[in-house]
Image (tube, rainbow, N blue to C red):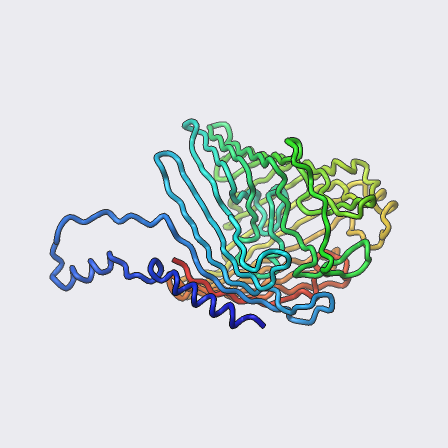
Length: 444
């Protein structure tokens, strides 16, 4: 077990960062001196300027709640992380950077010490009502809570299932984003020149169900995939048109690209790949009965399988979501969502599928519940998020406890619990990957 090594590295990192992190605040010294000498004004005060550099140091560990016969190691998270952030303005030009330097004891083929850039962008305004974002950035839109219909920007499902901070669910995109604002409606247009896939489950850290093997599998070998090309027409284009009317936000969406995970299979070369996808959608969000309500719909057109007859490519779908969130009593919030996937050309899918009994229902349903409770001046947060599918008869539960010890120190503990009647359903396949995790963070 490598926990002691990571703890030593964590402490060493704190010491290395001691000058910026632990130095006494000059403003505090000035205030103390002023109090001692009767509050006199001892000269012209300089304007405080916040440092453009910030970040955190974090240590995290997680382990399975039960043995997994397909994976050698019991731990699912074992890392120390240094985050550095920089943001500043140079006239009208904004520059932002977020980078992670990670010591990961569970790294597979990647280096034990790794660096990843989450943000490296510039932003400026070519005109009075236009903003342009260039570079690596985190992109998100839509109304769902951990359910994504029209948000087809990359996600990191390994981080999500392992218990990393929730921000790591959103993976970065190398893109150009144009935002245009006017009285009629606002427009966001995002072009990703080269396809950005999800960080998907490939067997390295978590086992999964393989339809080809008809059983649970894990690496080695990890899931092999064929990436889209690097030509101009192999990129992604996403659009959102939105407007606020009487306190309700209405939006229309469009996307042209690929499925974000390799859900198709090429029998000729034995590789999974990312089939072509186009989508159109709409959403509305606003106040309802003392809470916040939302509805969202999206049409997924599987361009490589228009009639649903190819069993190795997903069919087109209509996806629908409705949700409601409200504070039940002081500091206790309840959120509910209902989600539906309606698979098109379903008879053709069943007819040509090599495993027709293992195909999801034509109308796959999912219900989510979120409970959040805050206490002790919002220092303590208790939360529970549960996915449950009545059609698949499987679930995913995430209980968490977060505590902010001070402005700099915080910690979180939680569990990711999977289960289901069958091992081929979406959540049921991960039952042996159920885990607990804990993180400790120092921010500077």
